[in-house]
Image (cartoon, rainbow over all chains, first blue to last red; front, side, top):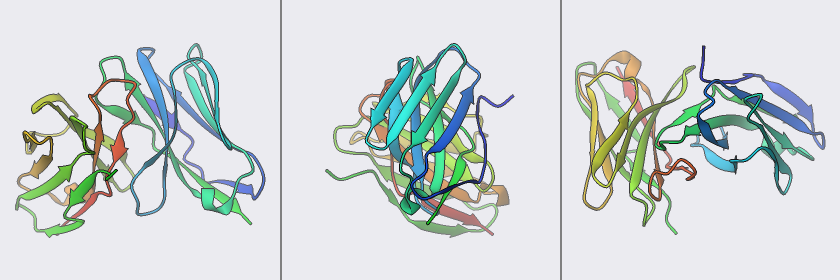
Length: 111
Length: 114
């Protein structure tokens, strides 16, 4: 069983719509959760992080964490073609150090 | 503030050779991480260095090794290269290695093994 799982997509949404990206993790010792965006041929860049249950909003992005269900999601409102990329969910444990990444979800926003 | 830098950007080697990849963290960061991103396999954790010491190691063979220098820069060495080592190697840094710290990634070194 993979430690961090994401739907590989591709997820296609029209411009202006809400894109919903989901991630589940297997280890209840997970402490911190990160969403990175990776454009083709580039390195990952941080979108958001979340540590506590509930929602965290930053501009058009909202991260949601439910530790009981071991589920973290990223909502992108008013999706733009420039949001087209692969979104990586990453999990860190209490002892720090490594991030465990999901396989990534490819998002395509159609004009 | 300068970000994480890596060199070289591209590296071509033949099977059996050794490769050395270099990374400079963000100023003030003491933790450096190495990840491998092979086609279809996602980002896999390789190594974590902090304050000059290896703190954690991923599920990779011993021919993947590295070190961290007193100025916190790091190098990754891959010995006896195999074709499947062809990948994007990403370096990241964070302030001290805590679980709640964001890891910032460099542009990567693309290694091709022929």
